[in-house]
Image (tube, rainbow, N blue to C red; front, side, top):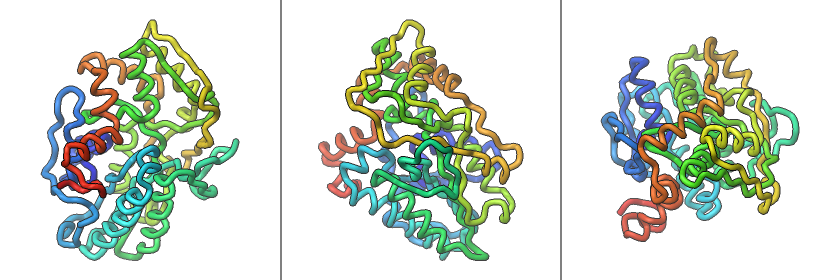
Length: 335
């Protein structure tokens, strides 16, 4: 698993281990210290940049789960070329190395943001992709390039995750529900700078982990070279509705939708029927309300601090701090 020491990876590893899988990580450790509460127990981990992966790194493995990426829109917009180098070119390199090493199944963490400004209808896997950020564009390109590698011996699967939420041993505070609940806990105020009207599909980190676990063992015909939206229609919500759930999870907090940044062009609702049909018994079960309450409890028990919320758990801030400390070069490589 690449990115095993990230936000999703730290949730996914124990889910896979509980299902009986032998997990080995592949991570540079950039965010390994972004821990809220007790530090997780990591699996054995190859400490290497995915831009340097070789087939020999992957020999003997039956599957690769590829999570590692520069993983949000502000970072992608700041460094679009590095985003494409890591998220696109290195991901394709990894897939080619996996195929050469004899890895059969390759699970790629894509995103529902590939649909971009999608209009009023709920998008399906065959809907047009209209990415509006370098991050989403990089995901579209990887899907196309890796799909071309599919054959009788190499089985890529593309999981287009909705926007993640929920507690993790390695927190991210720069995703919408996690961020709004954090503001509510720390300041007593849920602040939305947009007009709150854009639609977002949300999915809990544990529901993402379960989808990947099931795709590891699903019959070839069910998943081979296919893309799946990962989430549930029940969690298609406007930013205003998401903010309301954050407020409810923190009694006494207030909600302030200022509208000062206007309407966000990234607005889309998603149909998740295909993954339920392909993986019988799978259903993303965590509601936004459940996740908001889980986050509020985790933030209080850790406890969450303002310094952590504004720095340690914001991907862009972590990378900037490491560069300022001389730990990262201009290409985001560890010195």
